[in-house]
Length: 459
Image (cartoon, rainbow, N blue to C red):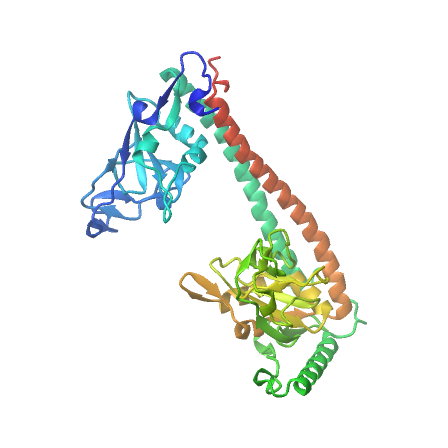
Protein backbone atom coordinates (compact mmCIF):
# COMPACT_ATOMS: atom_id res chain seq x y z
CA UNK A 1 0.00 0.00 0.00
CA UNK A 2 1.35 3.41 -0.97
CA UNK A 3 1.23 6.42 1.30
CA UNK A 4 -1.58 8.00 -0.69
CA UNK A 5 -3.69 4.81 -0.38
CA UNK A 6 -3.41 4.65 3.41
CA UNK A 7 -6.52 5.56 5.38
CA UNK A 8 -6.19 8.76 7.39
CA UNK A 9 -7.85 10.00 10.61
CA UNK A 10 -11.00 12.07 10.33
CA UNK A 11 -10.54 15.61 8.97
CA UNK A 12 -7.15 14.65 7.46
CA UNK A 13 -6.68 14.60 3.69
CA UNK A 14 -4.01 13.42 1.32
CA UNK A 15 -2.32 16.19 -0.59
CA UNK A 16 1.01 16.69 -2.37
CA UNK A 17 3.88 19.03 -1.66
CA UNK A 18 3.05 20.92 -4.82
CA UNK A 19 -0.60 21.41 -3.80
CA UNK A 20 -0.05 22.32 -0.16
CA UNK A 21 3.23 24.26 -0.36
CA UNK A 22 5.24 26.45 -2.65
CA UNK A 23 8.17 24.41 -4.00
CA UNK A 24 11.16 26.43 -5.25
CA UNK A 25 13.86 24.47 -7.07
CA UNK A 26 17.35 25.89 -6.65
CA UNK A 27 19.49 27.29 -9.42
CA UNK A 28 23.21 27.90 -9.25
CA UNK A 29 24.20 31.53 -9.93
CA UNK A 30 27.35 32.42 -11.90
CA UNK A 31 30.47 31.31 -10.06
CA UNK A 32 32.01 34.81 -10.18
CA UNK A 33 29.24 35.99 -7.84
CA UNK A 34 30.37 33.66 -5.01
CA UNK A 35 32.40 35.11 -2.15
CA UNK A 36 33.51 34.39 1.40
CA UNK A 37 33.39 38.00 2.58
CA UNK A 38 29.70 37.97 3.42
CA UNK A 39 28.60 40.05 0.41
CA UNK A 40 25.02 39.37 -0.62
CA UNK A 41 22.94 36.44 0.64
CA UNK A 42 24.18 33.24 2.28
CA UNK A 43 24.58 30.67 -0.48
CA UNK A 44 23.79 26.98 -0.01
CA UNK A 45 24.65 24.76 -2.97
CA UNK A 46 23.72 21.43 -1.37
CA UNK A 47 23.69 19.62 1.96
CA UNK A 48 27.38 20.26 2.70
CA UNK A 49 26.49 23.17 4.98
CA UNK A 50 23.59 21.37 6.71
CA UNK A 51 23.67 21.02 10.47
CA UNK A 52 21.42 19.01 12.82
CA UNK A 53 18.58 21.48 12.13
CA UNK A 54 19.90 24.66 10.46
CA UNK A 55 22.57 25.23 7.78
CA UNK A 56 25.70 27.27 8.47
CA UNK A 57 26.87 29.52 5.60
CA UNK A 58 30.48 29.36 4.46
CA UNK A 59 30.02 31.41 1.28
CA UNK A 60 27.72 34.10 -0.04
CA UNK A 61 26.31 35.21 -3.38
CA UNK A 62 26.11 38.80 -4.61
CA UNK A 63 23.69 38.01 -7.47
CA UNK A 64 21.29 35.36 -6.13
CA UNK A 65 18.91 33.58 -8.47
CA UNK A 66 16.54 31.34 -6.52
CA UNK A 67 15.91 32.50 -2.95
CA UNK A 68 14.74 30.65 0.16
CA UNK A 69 13.09 32.58 2.96
CA UNK A 70 13.35 32.18 6.72
CA UNK A 71 11.15 29.27 7.75
CA UNK A 72 11.46 27.42 4.43
CA UNK A 73 12.31 23.74 4.58
CA UNK A 74 15.47 23.05 2.59
CA UNK A 75 15.76 19.59 1.04
CA UNK A 76 18.71 18.12 -0.83
CA UNK A 77 17.52 17.00 -4.27
CA UNK A 78 20.79 15.60 -5.64
CA UNK A 79 23.69 13.54 -4.37
CA UNK A 80 22.26 12.67 -1.87
CA UNK A 81 18.51 12.99 -2.07
CA UNK A 82 16.51 13.50 1.11
CA UNK A 83 18.47 15.35 3.86
CA UNK A 84 16.61 18.36 5.24
CA UNK A 85 17.23 21.57 7.22
CA UNK A 86 15.29 24.69 8.19
CA UNK A 87 16.30 27.99 6.61
CA UNK A 88 16.83 30.73 9.23
CA UNK A 89 17.30 33.73 6.94
CA UNK A 90 16.84 34.78 3.35
CA UNK A 91 19.34 32.72 1.37
CA UNK A 92 20.38 31.85 -2.16
CA UNK A 93 19.94 28.15 -3.03
CA UNK A 94 21.84 26.25 -5.71
CA UNK A 95 20.67 23.42 -7.90
CA UNK A 96 21.38 20.82 -5.23
CA UNK A 97 18.55 22.13 -3.04
CA UNK A 98 14.88 22.97 -3.12
CA UNK A 99 12.94 25.18 -0.73
CA UNK A 100 9.48 24.14 0.47
CA UNK A 101 7.50 27.14 1.71
CA UNK A 102 4.45 26.62 3.94
CA UNK A 103 1.22 28.51 3.20
CA UNK A 104 -1.29 30.05 5.60
CA UNK A 105 1.13 30.11 8.54
CA UNK A 106 1.40 26.31 8.61
CA UNK A 107 4.28 25.12 10.83
CA UNK A 108 7.42 24.47 8.80
CA UNK A 109 8.37 21.61 11.09
CA UNK A 110 5.29 19.65 10.01
CA UNK A 111 6.60 19.16 6.47
CA UNK A 112 10.18 18.89 7.78
CA UNK A 113 9.27 15.88 9.92
CA UNK A 114 7.23 14.31 7.13
CA UNK A 115 10.22 14.55 4.81
CA UNK A 116 12.48 13.01 7.45
CA UNK A 117 10.07 10.08 7.66
CA UNK A 118 9.80 9.63 3.88
CA UNK A 119 13.34 10.57 2.80
CA UNK A 120 14.06 7.02 1.66
CA UNK A 121 10.97 6.95 -0.56
CA UNK A 122 12.13 10.15 -2.26
CA UNK A 123 15.67 8.81 -2.67
CA UNK A 124 14.33 5.66 -4.34
CA UNK A 125 12.84 7.83 -7.10
CA UNK A 126 16.18 9.46 -7.91
CA UNK A 127 17.64 9.06 -11.38
CA UNK A 128 20.99 9.85 -12.99
CA UNK A 129 24.24 7.98 -13.55
CA UNK A 130 26.74 10.58 -12.33
CA UNK A 131 24.62 12.25 -9.63
CA UNK A 132 21.39 10.74 -8.31
CA UNK A 133 18.75 13.47 -8.31
CA UNK A 134 15.01 14.05 -8.25
CA UNK A 135 13.15 16.54 -10.41
CA UNK A 136 10.84 19.33 -9.36
CA UNK A 137 7.93 17.28 -10.67
CA UNK A 138 8.86 14.32 -8.46
CA UNK A 139 9.16 16.56 -5.44
CA UNK A 140 5.89 18.38 -6.08
CA UNK A 141 4.06 15.06 -6.57
CA UNK A 142 5.35 13.67 -3.28
CA UNK A 143 2.27 12.90 -1.13
CA UNK A 144 1.77 14.33 2.37
CA UNK A 145 -1.04 13.65 4.87
CA UNK A 146 -2.52 17.06 5.64
CA UNK A 147 -3.97 17.42 9.13
CA UNK A 148 -6.07 20.37 10.29
CA UNK A 149 -3.89 23.34 11.20
CA UNK A 150 -4.41 23.11 14.98
CA UNK A 151 -3.61 19.39 14.83
CA UNK A 152 -0.44 20.09 12.84
CA UNK A 153 0.78 22.39 15.60
CA UNK A 154 -0.01 19.84 18.32
CA UNK A 155 1.79 17.11 16.35
CA UNK A 156 4.89 19.26 15.92
CA UNK A 157 4.91 20.17 19.62
CA UNK A 158 4.58 16.51 20.67
CA UNK A 159 7.30 15.34 18.26
CA UNK A 160 9.68 18.00 19.58
CA UNK A 161 8.88 17.09 23.18
CA UNK A 162 9.64 13.40 22.55
CA UNK A 163 12.69 14.18 20.39
CA UNK A 164 14.03 16.43 23.16
CA UNK A 165 13.93 13.49 25.57
CA UNK A 166 15.57 11.25 22.99
CA UNK A 167 18.27 13.85 22.35
CA UNK A 168 19.07 13.97 26.07
CA UNK A 169 19.38 10.19 26.19
CA UNK A 170 21.52 10.08 23.04
CA UNK A 171 23.81 12.78 24.43
CA UNK A 172 24.24 10.77 27.65
CA UNK A 173 25.08 7.61 25.69
CA UNK A 174 27.64 9.48 23.60
CA UNK A 175 29.25 10.84 26.77
CA UNK A 176 29.54 7.28 28.03
CA UNK A 177 31.10 6.19 24.73
CA UNK A 178 33.62 9.03 24.94
CA UNK A 179 34.48 8.05 28.52
CA UNK A 180 34.94 4.42 27.45
CA UNK A 181 37.26 5.55 24.66
CA UNK A 182 39.34 7.58 27.11
CA UNK A 183 39.49 4.67 29.54
CA UNK A 184 40.60 2.30 26.78
CA UNK A 185 43.38 4.74 25.87
CA UNK A 186 44.49 4.89 29.51
CA UNK A 187 44.51 1.08 29.79
CA UNK A 188 46.67 0.76 26.67
CA UNK A 189 48.97 3.50 27.93
CA UNK A 190 49.37 1.66 31.24
CA UNK A 191 50.15 -1.55 29.35
CA UNK A 192 52.87 0.16 27.30
CA UNK A 193 54.42 1.74 30.39
CA UNK A 194 54.48 -1.38 32.57
CA UNK A 195 51.81 -0.13 34.98
CA UNK A 196 49.01 -2.58 34.23
CA UNK A 197 50.32 -5.68 36.08
CA UNK A 198 53.22 -6.22 38.50
CA UNK A 199 56.53 -7.42 37.09
CA UNK A 200 58.47 -10.44 38.34
CA UNK A 201 62.14 -9.41 38.79
CA UNK A 202 63.22 -12.97 37.94
CA UNK A 203 61.85 -12.75 34.40
CA UNK A 204 64.37 -12.94 31.59
CA UNK A 205 65.14 -9.39 30.33
CA UNK A 206 63.52 -8.36 27.06
CA UNK A 207 66.97 -7.67 25.60
CA UNK A 208 67.66 -11.43 25.62
CA UNK A 209 64.43 -12.05 23.73
CA UNK A 210 65.24 -9.35 21.18
CA UNK A 211 68.76 -10.75 20.75
CA UNK A 212 67.36 -14.20 19.89
CA UNK A 213 64.92 -12.64 17.43
CA UNK A 214 67.73 -10.73 15.70
CA UNK A 215 69.83 -13.90 15.50
CA UNK A 216 66.90 -15.73 13.92
CA UNK A 217 66.38 -12.82 11.54
CA UNK A 218 69.96 -13.04 10.29
CA UNK A 219 69.76 -16.83 10.00
CA UNK A 220 66.52 -16.54 8.02
CA UNK A 221 68.14 -14.05 5.64
CA UNK A 222 71.22 -16.19 5.18
CA UNK A 223 69.02 -19.15 4.27
CA UNK A 224 67.14 -16.98 1.78
CA UNK A 225 70.36 -15.74 0.24
CA UNK A 226 71.66 -19.28 -0.18
CA UNK A 227 68.44 -20.26 -1.94
CA UNK A 228 67.85 -17.06 -3.94
CA UNK A 229 71.31 -15.59 -4.28
CA UNK A 230 70.68 -14.37 -7.82
CA UNK A 231 67.45 -12.61 -6.94
CA UNK A 232 68.19 -8.85 -7.04
CA UNK A 233 65.61 -8.31 -4.30
CA UNK A 234 67.70 -10.56 -2.05
CA UNK A 235 71.09 -9.22 -3.12
CA UNK A 236 72.32 -8.48 0.38
CA UNK A 237 71.37 -8.73 4.02
CA UNK A 238 69.58 -5.64 5.30
CA UNK A 239 70.28 -4.56 8.85
CA UNK A 240 67.06 -3.77 10.71
CA UNK A 241 66.36 -0.23 11.88
CA UNK A 242 67.26 0.06 15.56
CA UNK A 243 65.42 2.56 17.78
CA UNK A 244 67.26 5.72 18.84
CA UNK A 245 66.77 5.08 22.54
CA UNK A 246 68.05 8.42 23.82
CA UNK A 247 65.01 10.24 22.39
CA UNK A 248 62.45 7.74 23.72
CA UNK A 249 60.72 7.62 27.11
CA UNK A 250 62.33 5.63 29.91
CA UNK A 251 61.07 2.07 30.20
CA UNK A 252 60.75 -0.15 33.30
CA UNK A 253 63.69 -2.34 34.23
CA UNK A 254 64.30 -5.30 31.92
CA UNK A 255 62.21 -3.76 29.13
CA UNK A 256 63.71 -2.54 25.88
CA UNK A 257 62.73 -0.72 22.68
CA UNK A 258 62.29 -2.61 19.41
CA UNK A 259 61.37 -1.61 15.86
CA UNK A 260 58.98 -3.28 13.46
CA UNK A 261 61.86 -4.05 11.09
CA UNK A 262 63.82 -5.77 13.89
CA UNK A 263 61.09 -8.28 14.66
CA UNK A 264 60.17 -9.12 11.04
CA UNK A 265 62.10 -10.85 8.29
CA UNK A 266 60.14 -9.59 5.30
CA UNK A 267 57.61 -6.92 4.33
CA UNK A 268 55.72 -6.34 1.11
CA UNK A 269 52.53 -5.33 -0.66
CA UNK A 270 49.69 -7.59 -1.74
CA UNK A 271 48.09 -8.41 -5.06
CA UNK A 272 46.74 -5.61 -7.25
CA UNK A 273 44.57 -7.84 -9.43
CA UNK A 274 40.83 -7.25 -9.62
CA UNK A 275 38.72 -9.05 -7.05
CA UNK A 276 35.00 -9.85 -7.18
CA UNK A 277 32.45 -11.45 -4.87
CA UNK A 278 31.48 -14.12 -7.39
CA UNK A 279 34.97 -14.97 -8.71
CA UNK A 280 36.30 -18.54 -8.41
CA UNK A 281 39.76 -17.64 -7.06
CA UNK A 282 40.93 -17.69 -3.44
CA UNK A 283 39.71 -15.04 -0.97
CA UNK A 284 41.61 -11.75 -0.81
CA UNK A 285 41.76 -9.79 2.46
CA UNK A 286 40.85 -6.12 1.92
CA UNK A 287 40.52 -3.04 4.13
CA UNK A 288 36.97 -3.91 5.31
CA UNK A 289 38.29 -7.25 6.56
CA UNK A 290 40.84 -5.67 8.92
CA UNK A 291 39.47 -5.21 12.44
CA UNK A 292 41.13 -4.34 15.75
CA UNK A 293 44.08 -6.71 15.64
CA UNK A 294 42.19 -9.44 13.79
CA UNK A 295 40.12 -10.20 10.66
CA UNK A 296 36.44 -10.14 9.76
CA UNK A 297 35.81 -12.70 7.03
CA UNK A 298 32.15 -11.83 6.50
CA UNK A 299 32.66 -9.65 3.42
CA UNK A 300 35.25 -11.39 1.27
CA UNK A 301 36.00 -10.89 -2.39
CA UNK A 302 37.90 -13.43 -4.49
CA UNK A 303 40.77 -13.21 -6.95
CA UNK A 304 39.78 -13.32 -10.60
CA UNK A 305 43.14 -14.64 -11.86
CA UNK A 306 44.15 -17.31 -9.38
CA UNK A 307 47.03 -18.60 -11.55
CA UNK A 308 48.75 -15.21 -11.43
CA UNK A 309 48.90 -14.93 -7.65
CA UNK A 310 52.43 -15.15 -6.17
CA UNK A 311 53.44 -18.51 -4.74
CA UNK A 312 54.29 -17.02 -1.34
CA UNK A 313 51.51 -14.43 -1.37
CA UNK A 314 49.02 -16.20 0.89
CA UNK A 315 48.79 -15.36 4.57
CA UNK A 316 50.13 -17.65 7.26
CA UNK A 317 50.55 -17.68 11.04
CA UNK A 318 52.78 -14.82 12.18
CA UNK A 319 51.79 -12.40 9.42
CA UNK A 320 50.97 -8.86 10.55
CA UNK A 321 48.86 -7.02 7.96
CA UNK A 322 48.69 -3.21 7.98
CA UNK A 323 46.43 -0.83 6.00
CA UNK A 324 48.80 1.39 4.04
CA UNK A 325 46.48 3.74 2.11
CA UNK A 326 43.00 5.11 2.78
CA UNK A 327 41.03 8.32 2.81
CA UNK A 328 40.37 8.00 6.53
CA UNK A 329 43.11 8.91 9.00
CA UNK A 330 41.48 6.62 11.55
CA UNK A 331 41.82 3.61 9.24
CA UNK A 332 45.37 4.20 8.07
CA UNK A 333 47.72 1.84 9.91
CA UNK A 334 44.98 -0.41 11.28
CA UNK A 335 46.34 -3.94 11.52
CA UNK A 336 45.27 -7.57 11.72
CA UNK A 337 47.41 -10.42 13.04
CA UNK A 338 47.17 -13.99 11.75
CA UNK A 339 47.02 -16.16 14.88
CA UNK A 340 45.64 -19.30 13.26
CA UNK A 341 45.90 -20.77 9.76
CA UNK A 342 43.02 -19.99 7.41
CA UNK A 343 40.92 -22.96 6.32
CA UNK A 344 41.93 -22.24 2.68
CA UNK A 345 44.70 -19.98 1.28
CA UNK A 346 43.84 -16.29 1.77
CA UNK A 347 45.74 -13.55 -0.04
CA UNK A 348 45.81 -9.80 0.65
CA UNK A 349 45.24 -6.71 -1.47
CA UNK A 350 47.84 -4.21 -2.65
CA UNK A 351 46.70 -1.43 -0.33
CA UNK A 352 47.84 -3.58 2.58
CA UNK A 353 51.37 -4.32 3.79
CA UNK A 354 52.29 -7.71 5.21
CA UNK A 355 55.01 -8.02 7.82
CA UNK A 356 56.26 -11.54 8.41
CA UNK A 357 57.11 -11.61 12.11
CA UNK A 358 59.81 -13.80 13.62
CA UNK A 359 57.89 -14.61 16.81
CA UNK A 360 54.21 -15.37 17.31
CA UNK A 361 54.50 -14.04 20.84
CA UNK A 362 55.70 -10.71 19.45
CA UNK A 363 52.70 -10.77 17.12
CA UNK A 364 50.33 -11.19 20.05
CA UNK A 365 52.04 -8.33 21.86
CA UNK A 366 51.99 -6.00 18.85
CA UNK A 367 48.34 -6.74 18.13
CA UNK A 368 47.50 -6.04 21.78
CA UNK A 369 49.15 -2.59 21.93
CA UNK A 370 48.91 -1.49 18.27
CA UNK A 371 46.01 0.87 18.96
CA UNK A 372 47.78 2.60 21.84
CA UNK A 373 48.28 6.34 21.62
CA UNK A 374 52.07 5.91 21.44
CA UNK A 375 51.95 3.73 18.32
CA UNK A 376 49.02 5.58 16.70
CA UNK A 377 50.94 8.82 17.10
CA UNK A 378 53.92 7.41 15.20
CA UNK A 379 51.72 6.03 12.42
CA UNK A 380 49.79 9.25 11.92
CA UNK A 381 52.96 11.33 12.04
CA UNK A 382 54.60 9.18 9.38
CA UNK A 383 51.53 9.13 7.10
CA UNK A 384 51.85 11.23 3.95
CA UNK A 385 48.82 12.75 2.24
CA UNK A 386 48.10 13.01 -1.46
CA UNK A 387 44.82 13.78 -3.25
CA UNK A 388 42.86 13.25 -0.05
CA UNK A 389 44.50 9.88 0.69
CA UNK A 390 46.69 8.99 3.66
CA UNK A 391 49.62 6.70 2.90
CA UNK A 392 52.26 4.84 4.87
CA UNK A 393 55.08 2.89 3.28
CA UNK A 394 57.23 -0.07 4.27
CA UNK A 395 60.05 2.40 4.89
CA UNK A 396 58.02 4.51 7.31
CA UNK A 397 56.54 1.50 9.11
CA UNK A 398 59.99 -0.04 9.50
CA UNK A 399 60.79 2.86 11.83
CA UNK A 400 57.81 2.27 14.12
CA UNK A 401 59.16 1.50 17.59
CA UNK A 402 57.37 -0.14 20.47
CA UNK A 403 58.13 -1.07 24.09
CA UNK A 404 59.11 -4.71 24.54
CA UNK A 405 58.61 -6.27 27.99
CA UNK A 406 60.02 -9.62 29.17
CA UNK A 407 58.32 -12.57 27.53
CA UNK A 408 56.43 -13.85 30.58
CA UNK A 409 55.29 -10.34 31.45
CA UNK A 410 53.90 -9.91 27.92
CA UNK A 411 51.57 -12.84 28.52
CA UNK A 412 50.30 -11.40 31.82
CA UNK A 413 49.76 -7.93 30.31
CA UNK A 414 47.93 -9.35 27.29
CA UNK A 415 45.64 -11.41 29.54
CA UNK A 416 44.77 -8.35 31.64
CA UNK A 417 44.28 -6.23 28.54
CA UNK A 418 41.94 -8.84 27.10
CA UNK A 419 39.95 -8.88 30.34
CA UNK A 420 39.56 -5.12 30.64
CA UNK A 421 39.03 -4.39 26.95
CA UNK A 422 36.43 -7.15 26.73
CA UNK A 423 34.42 -5.40 29.45
CA UNK A 424 34.80 -2.05 27.68
CA UNK A 425 33.76 -3.60 24.36
CA UNK A 426 30.58 -5.03 25.87
CA UNK A 427 29.71 -1.65 27.41
CA UNK A 428 30.35 0.10 24.10
CA UNK A 429 28.19 -2.42 22.23
CA UNK A 430 25.41 -1.79 24.74
CA UNK A 431 25.70 1.96 24.13
CA UNK A 432 25.62 1.47 20.38
CA UNK A 433 22.62 -0.84 20.64
CA UNK A 434 20.71 1.85 22.52
CA UNK A 435 21.82 4.55 20.07
CA UNK A 436 20.51 2.43 17.19
CA UNK A 437 17.33 1.85 19.17
CA UNK A 438 16.94 5.61 19.67
CA UNK A 439 17.23 6.09 15.90
CA UNK A 440 14.54 3.49 15.27
CA UNK A 441 12.36 5.02 17.98
CA UNK A 442 12.71 8.41 16.31
CA UNK A 443 11.30 6.95 13.10
CA UNK A 444 8.56 5.19 15.05
CA UNK A 445 7.51 8.50 16.62
CA UNK A 446 7.31 10.11 13.19
CA UNK A 447 5.36 7.19 11.78
CA UNK A 448 2.80 7.34 14.58
CA UNK A 449 2.56 11.12 14.29
CA UNK A 450 1.57 10.98 10.64
CA UNK A 451 -0.80 8.08 11.20
CA UNK A 452 -2.71 10.10 13.79
CA UNK A 453 -1.62 7.66 16.52
CA UNK A 454 0.56 10.01 18.57
CA UNK A 455 -1.13 11.28 21.71
CA UNK A 456 -0.77 15.03 21.51
CA UNK A 457 -2.40 16.09 24.75
CA UNK A 458 -5.64 17.12 23.07
CA UNK A 459 -6.97 13.55 22.75
